[in-house]
Length: 89
Length: 268
Image (cartoon, rainbow over the protein chains, first blue to last red):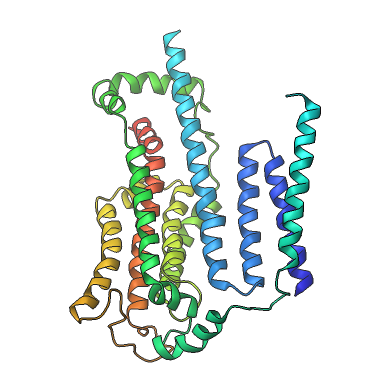
């Protein structure tokens, strides 16, 4: 159990680094979701199933979803602005 | 600041952080050892006192129920803030009403020329469409199960609520935007959210009528292990589930409102 826990903690550290080093926002989002899932696994191994469930719902679903929605909205606004500029030309 | 100086600053900081970190690690308890007294006390007492087999939820919804009430209203005010910030702008509304038709013709023409103007228009595979629509009901059921069995097994209202709120997203993924919008833009949604939050506070106030302190567990506890047991814990958990699911759905809709209305215009 201890080896599993230590390995998982190391993996979480590496994943965090990977997220920071990822350039593309969409890829970063997927990595973040995976990171949340790893966190949930860690909570489960450390005998906190309640927290693990919260972590799955929030860290692996809700947080990436919110960020995805925000990015979609930003892209949408950019597209709108682009159209407007085109019309002015 | 020159590169060299920056590096010196970095290493000085890194050494300091490492020193504090090592000091902290040295005093950590060994693997799997719990030192605090409260955990053992409450693990021994909760099933006997509250008839709830999931001690974590007995704590969050009963022993420290007042804190959870505060947390619930943090979410409530956060969602209110999101809705205020993302409300439709006035100019957009005007555009929609006044120049709708003219705009539409131009838009259609533009999209014919440039189909990938704002969204990738690759058609969705039928497998994905059928599967996500089919899983919708299961997700809903699973959310309700998690939300209503918080007093027995890990889970509870918060987790169940988020799962329920994720179900309509599957419809969006399946491009069934009509059903998606019908669910999320329902005028009752705001009421449901407020109802969930208010019900929690009212359950707490109800205890005062029995001349007991705020949020006392006044409902009969029932038999340990039954779904209808543990008194107010199950009830509050359900209220939190209602509030959380509505809150997340409202937030999702606020983010997607503009995109949805645009897509609708295009289809008209």
